[in-house]
Amino acid sequence: MRVGIIGGGVIGLGIGWRLAQAGCAVTLFERDRAGSGASHAAAGMLAAGIETEPGERDLFTLNHQSQALWPDFAADVQAASGLDIGYRTEGTLRIALTRDDAAKLRHELAFQQSMGVALEWLTPAQAREREPYLDAKLAGAVFSPADHQVDNRKLAPALAAAFSKAGGVLREGQKIERIEIEAGRARALRTASGLHEFDVIVLAAGAWSGLIEGFPPLPVRPVKGQMLALQMNPAAPLAHHVIWAPGVYIVPRADGRLVIGATVEERGFDGALTAGGLLALLDGAWRALPGIEELPVIETWAGFRPGSRDDAPILGASGIDGLIFATGHHRNGILLTPVTVAAVTETILSGVSDPRILAFSMTRFQKRQQAA
Ligand code: GLY
Image (cartoon, rainbow, N blue to C red; front, side, top):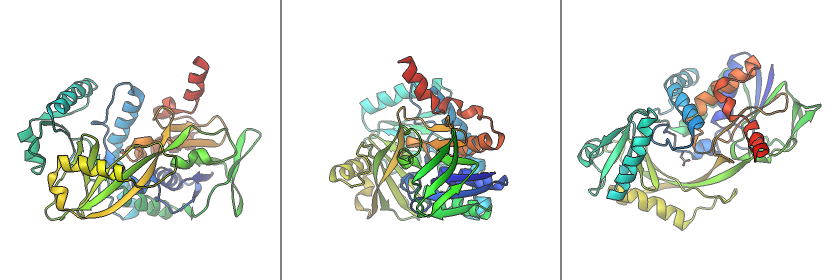
C-alpha cells in the first residue's frame, strides 16, 4: 500500500514509522524540518491524571489509554532508533500557594479521584520532601505518580530515525498545495514539484492542517503558547518532578534545562514573544520556585497547538475515501502520540475504524450541527 503523510511532527512520523514497519511504502511531506512545529515547542508532559477536567469523558479515556501505552512506546522508539528520548518517571506535582489554591486543588482532587485517577494529597512538608526548593508559602500539593514526561525535542528526531530505518521516505521543505480528490476518493498530493499518487493519505499537519486545499476546511486553528527555558546546574537541579503551579508549569530536563510554559493565546500564526507573556511565566515560576531568580534564561519561543472546535483531536475516517485525519491534538499531542499512532495505523491496515478513536471522528461536528 502506498501511503502519503502530510506533516512531519511526532504524530505523522510515528504513523509513518509503524506503517513502514508493516510493509507500506510511506512518503512523508513536511513543509519545514521534521519535528520543527509543535513537536519542538511542546513541554513533553504526559499529564493524563493531573489535567483531568469535568465534561471530557471521551478525551479522559483516550488520554489514559495513551498514557498506559507510553512506557512500551518509549522503549520501542529508543530500540528502533538507537536514540534516548528522555523518558522520566518521577511524576508530577500540582502545587497550591494560597489557601484558596489549596481549596480548589482539593475540590478537583475529589473529582479526579472519583474518575479513578491515582493521585495523592501532600502536606506542605511532604511536598517539600519531594521538592525542597518549593516556596515557603506552599499550602499543599497533589502528587500524580503516573504523569511522566518525555523530552519532545529528542522524541521527534528519534521517530524520524526509526521511520527512515524502517524504509520510510522523508521529504522536508515540501509544502502540500492540495489534496487531489477524484470521484470522492483522495488520490494524490500536489507539491511544487508535481503530483504524488497514493492509496491512502494521512493529514497530520498540526496547526497547519486547516490550510491544505482540496477538501472542506477542517475546524483546526493555531493556539499560541509562549515558553522559555532557564539553565540549572544539572548536578544540583532545583526540581526533579514536573511542577504545575498556578498559571504555569515547570519541567526539568536531565541536562539542567528548566522549561517553563505556557501562555494560551488566540493570535493566529503570530509567533511574537511579548513582555506580558514572558512576565506572567517568570512570575508564576518564581512564586513557585524562588531559586530560579539567579538562573540564566537560555531560550524563549512560541509554538502553535492545533486546536479543534471542542479541543479534542480529529482522528480516523474523514468521509472521503482514502483520506485519514490525525490532527487537532491541542494541548495533548505528545501524550496522545502512542494511541493516535496505534489506532490510526490499525485503521489504515485493517480498513476498519479502530474503536478507540470512533468518538473522535470528524463526523461528530457534523452531527452536532444537525442537532443544533
Ligand atoms: N500541554 C501543555 C500546553 O499545551 O501548554
